Amino acid sequence: MRSKRFLFALAALLTAAGILSACGRGEESSVDRKIRVLPDDFAYTVKTEGHTVEYADSRGREIALYGQLWRPEAEGVYPAVILCHGFNGHFTDFLTECRRFASRGYVCYAFDFCGAQAGGKSTGRSASEYTPYTMVEDLSAAVDNIGKLAYVDGQQIFLLGGSQGGFVAALAAAELKEEIAALAMYFPAFNIPDDWRTAPVQDTPLMGYSIGAEYIRSIRKLDPFAVIGAYGGDVCVVWGDRDALVLKKYIDGAVAAYGPERAELTVIPGAGHGFGGAALSAAVDKVCSFLEARTYES
Image 1 (cartoon, rainbow, N blue to C red):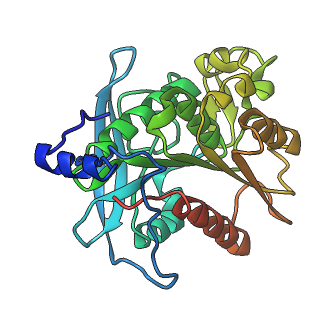
Image 2 (spheres, helix red, strand yellow):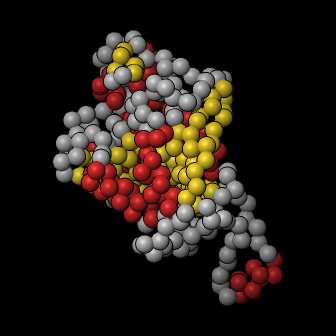
């Protein structure tokens, strides 16, 4: 939190009126801030540019996360959404969301988790070295980097993850806590530890890519529901009732971990693991509404 800076004369006047106001952005509490309201039909013109996040991970590897930024062309300071792809996915998996959210006044950053997909553009880690925890490191570095951009309100960084990316976003939010304004997830794969709990600890081909021995070793004893509730912000979960990969018990477990007073669950009838068409439109609408209800004027 930035140190509070007060103008003495102004403070004296405001104190006489029984009101004190911080001058720096991010000083006021969410109770004192106003929710940003845009007309329903309003859309910013959006521009896109490549953006690489460079950092050294916990093992000293030099990581370069390749991704793209979508942001309003108009000058200003905006909230940000960082998007996390699923297993063997790429930053391009969230093009629809990035274009929509940016048009509504968000800076969006989607990137390739390092080592986590075939043909990924991020560098510094191999397929056998990546785990959900290295992905948490990647995401934490992205949060730090994006939050420092001159046109981003670092007090308003949101996360959206799909499948494995939702699982990772939840783990990261539990670690970063108040650095994350709110968390949204599509069909978050909280089943991952159970799926690998008794599997041989070895490199294993899966869905056009592979799961490394280190990946399996790192999460086989994890109870995600004992961890994710450490995040105290609001949570949006969108799930399809025909999802054969992430069963309802895992979604219910997440809602229970966060508490129903903080976690919103939207079930899309007939949708499976992966949204398209009308299901995707409904999911994007839901997350956009969720974000906007929690976005304050910068």
